[in-house]
Image 1 (cartoon, rainbow, N blue to C red):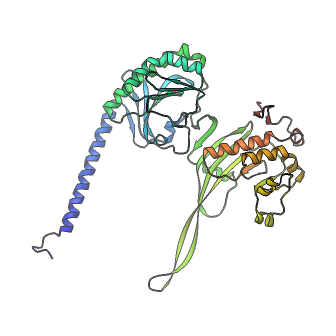
Image 2 (tube, helix red, strand yellow; image 1 turned 90 degrees about the vertical axis):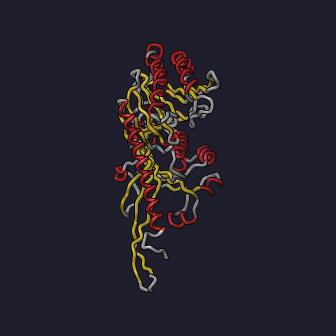
Image 3 (cartoon, rainbow, N blue to C red; image 1 turned 120 degrees about the vertical axis):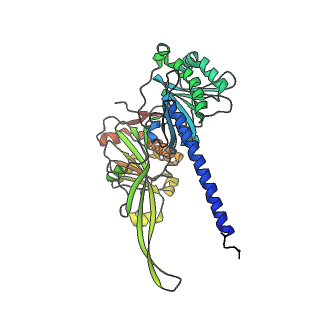
Length: 430
């Protein structure tokens, strides 16, 4: 026991910790205030919590991939040479700070990275080397050459001072890795503005390569019809889903075109249920409590522009045969062992699941799916852009292998999907 009636060592320790915490908090707040003031003193706008829509229209990685699309620390302004810019942290880039500058017109994709720099996920048909050992990736070699003729000099000058990680993304020049310090950022932006200015001033040379303007939404790399929404709860009024429970909502929604007149949607449906359970407390008394359970299901659905008999291709299941009736058998035993097939019109099932079709589905390892009421529902293995792409590719091959007489019987004069002589899928261009 301590004497003198003074505060105990524990109290003193707690007071010291509180004082240290307060001092750290004040230091962080003052530093943050100075940072924001330095940004705004330059005439720039600062938003500590920007909406994801600041990345609308950007699809070249780190944009346009996956569902990790958070943004932070948004700065908008104009360089000392008069070039507009925005800078923000982007979650899919590992929270790296990305600069975007307009270049005057939408142009083909080009990615230029210096030594040690990469843009994960970029797929390019043409590769080349930059002076000094960097990598140049492009979709159109003629444009890539024209771009280097215009911007190669200022880009090399920028790369001599800073790590080069640059891309032409629609009508924007993007550069990953901007510094946060306002003084360093200002010099960085001035150097990058030289590249943007060179492209902006070369309109006549680059005009032959002009592209369609990018859609101002969160898109997907190399999938122009796809777009992303963090949530779209209105889907629950039009898409069949598990009912009951409460707090129904959606997440990671992907919309897009399957083929002409056909659209797909993929999302995760979340909801909660509650139950009351009885338990015995520590005193031996019986008590009740409410337990809330969280549930989710992945929904991938395609809307078709034509009607057809129903068809279900599910994984082979003894319980399925018990409750849903026998499966339709086909010539290939391995297919019968792997899948159960049902249809209210067995002839239709045999017409579309002919031997070459079955060989195709077995080779691709098709996911289970069903056709009913003008919609296709798959049983997704997971909810990712890659899983959606796989499912759509399998279904495209499936419909492209329907015989011509099936389409005629359905009243479809021209099949929306067909196979070319070399086995490629051809989409009807209306």
